[in-house]
Length: 293
Image (cartoon, rainbow, N blue to C red; front, side, top):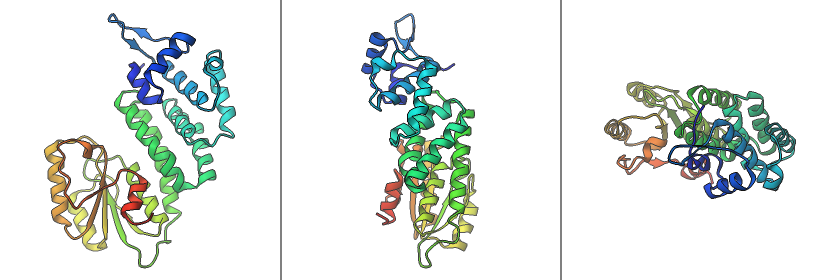
């Protein structure tokens, strides 16, 4: 059982700490433990219930009504509303619940519904990308474990690989060529798979070299494929000096190729990103950098 501070709950659910305190005090929706110094600590069950309540509250149901419902009644209400609800935030909340509860059926229903309503590219941009940012917060505060992260990552990878494969052979004849890869020790590939799908969808020639790629093999692939762009992601923790050294080597080795980079590690204050590199912060930013908007 994980324990969360009220600030953790605020980050995960999007409900302000002040509001959580009011709901707790006035309506008794959750019942935290308190430390000897009177600091609130919330459980996994408190987190699940607050997620359910915040989701339903966002659809217009008053908190005074929701406070009277049991956890089972709240879940039933969510399933009832989800059959017709098109709110993007609602999709993200349900995916969060699917992750926490290892609920593959809920994940499939949410993603399938979004794809049917908006298409795969819009689902990636508006649902999956912000959801993965939410997963990062969940990981940071310790509310999901490696098994849960692997569970949801593998489900998303399966969807993305299937969607990417469906676009094989549809690149435009004179379109730019892009290599996507992850360096040695880097295994978090969801981001580059998102970008690979967007590239294929927009007619680019793309070559995904996968995870954990040695630098010498990247050099060989670039010499053979001769891409216009290289895209990589840096998420797994690494020493600052090693990261800066890697980015410098990448710059020197491919000085005549446009390099686009992304990932949490690049947000460190002392990271030195070469000036000519472009930073991808979202699928929309990728499209802007590739002049697709």
